[in-house]
Amino acid sequence: MNSPGPRRQLNNALHTVVQSRIQYQQATRDYVARRTAEGKTSREIKRCLARYVARDLYRLLENRATAA
Image 1 (spheres, rainbow, N blue to C red):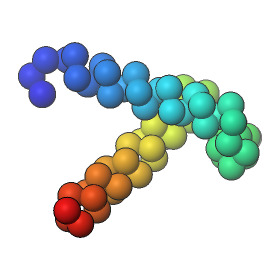
Image 2 (cartoon, one colour; image 1 turned 135 degrees about the horizontal axis):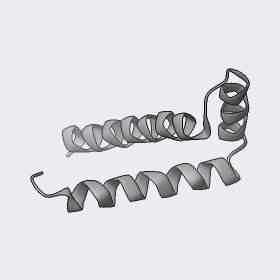
Image 3 (cartoon, rainbow, N blue to C red; image 1 turned 90 degrees about the horizontal axis):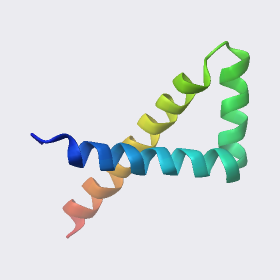
């Protein structure tokens, strides 16, 4: 990826997923509350959640590629 365009689109998509999970998924809200109690900032928490989502997506795509 030489141009920043695809990375921006990916980061935007991850951000959207993280925001949706925070708003609608109880397990994610519990995670946010736990990490906030540990003293993490909201930015740090969202960064961790985005990494978690990215890892999940990578695993799904990787498994799909090996199954095909």
